[in-house]
Image (cartoon, rainbow, N blue to C red; front, side):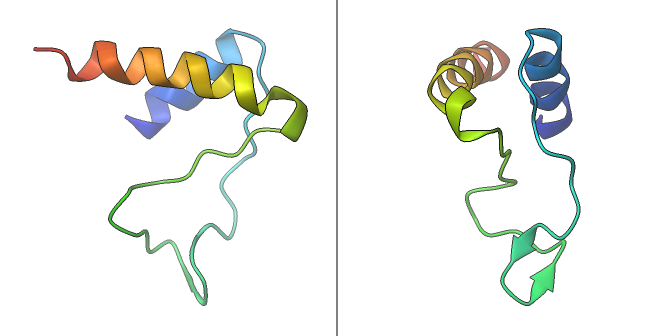
Length: 62
């Protein structure tokens, strides 16, 4: 789902940061129980959060 969200954010003009050393402190690539963080520039964060929330609701609706 994270890959789909990143692609959708890019398609809507947002600039999600590329992977790199993300994950738990001292353990790159290991993520906590809330999943994979997707970071965007601060000035895009509010709008990106709204879009990501709507997309997640659509993806999880069954």
